Image (cartoon, rainbow, N blue to C red):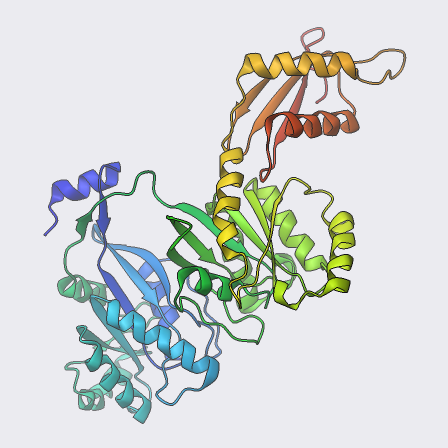
Length: 457
């Protein structure tokens, strides 16, 4: 059992705790994701009044009265599911088997169904403790009608209204009674590096995640848009553990999206912001699209390290390879510094090259150039190629410093404003000299003060 001292140390970052897990399971459209949001106290899981919005098992950090635990939202479970629905059901079964406590959610407004009864049999096979949650109990009248749920054989049904919050606090107290204490685990040095796996729908993000994990971590289907919530996974590949987040495929700008797609877009953007490096997956068999460009812009503006993976390379013939080369020159000319890898999530081709590519991008993302070395190089550069004369005078670069890393940030102190073209020239030469492959770099120009007022940047 973990002690109060353990918890204090965990908050200070001295030790890591293995948190107990609560899996939320039930057939489609009984309000599982709404209940997850109620437990979390925030709108985190994607919710829409359509069955089947959640597809993968998605983990969230939760807390109640000082106790921390993990909540796993799952897709709707059906006994005779086929194809994609079968994959979704399998994810729910895995969640139930690995949980410390299962919340089995049923719709209290209708009698128990044969699917509910089949789910109970599945849960008994999992061996995990189960709390029967009667959802949609919005008033006392409905609460008086839930006696039939005793017939499921899971004991007393616990009435809640996930939508309105009725009974939520009591349910959380019951969950804590059933959960084991958090357990200290051996900390990882520095923790796994965080990777956001992004791209437009159906480029193979979930397939790549599963190939790297060597197991089914995410639901894969030929229908675009299978992933809605970001799917977090600790994945071992290339001799290292990585924290990989599979995100929703982005079709539209966030401002133009609605419903599920709107919230999925927000969560994808948040996953990129929380990551250190992004793998942008492009479909090598199709032309680079406006959607691909928009996703690249999102990653570049976030300042994250970048690896571009051209997936479905097994479908690329000589003609397509020639056309793709032309597209890269034309469409990706603003990110010539990105690390590029040609892979096939289906066959496993070259996926072993992703780990070295990620390490290169991250190392350069965190690279710091000593001030003396930086200014020695800069002096030689501006002497060989001074700034063009404008209006009879040319501004001079006085000195430079690196203001930060992740991504690298440089400040140029000058006698006046520099032309944007000259700043781009300095950036290009900086990359050539100090190796910044895989990372954006930010250059700020600070003209010398004149008469107590700083000039324009």
